[in-house]
Length: 194
Ligand SMILES: [Mg+2]
Ligand SMILES: [Zn+2]
Image (cartoon, rainbow, N blue to C red; front, side):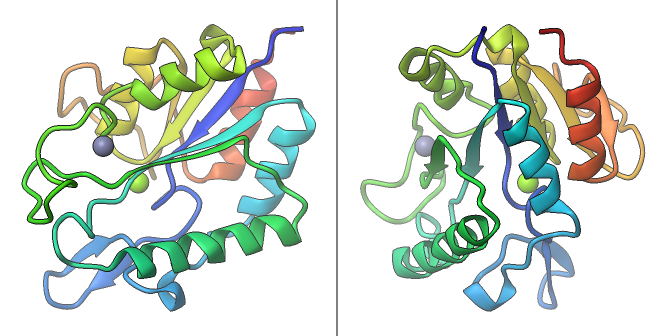
């Protein structure tokens, strides 16, 4: 049997985005208290895991590079995710975080990197290390860059959005749209071909 993966963006897919009162925009959680899983995420992950998919997180987290957050805070947020997953009996094969940003201010984390989405670098590395079939794998994300990343790697794509989104960037049209992860999991499981 071929090993396939579901690559998952984090913010806006697993956990809720957080309104920033200063900018009026929805952003990544800035502290562990702001990190809250969305409804039915754990059962959806459990279904994918039970179906044999390797679960792999692929997340851009540039706030340290941008001078907006400490590494300790980013790690605390990650630990909160880990705890929630562990309590639900869900095991991820990889947690892939890009901590870089092209316009960052922290030496060593700033400038161009190989791993920031839309680069498919983490997906290709996971394929090589875990022997994955990317043709049977999926990328689920809420941003155009998630879809570009998935398409560049040759996986199938699902955009988490209230309604299908028009193309705002090349190669950013997802194969499917789902309102939330539970619906995305249904699409993955319905299309399972092996
Ligand atoms: Mg996101
Ligand atoms: Zn990177």
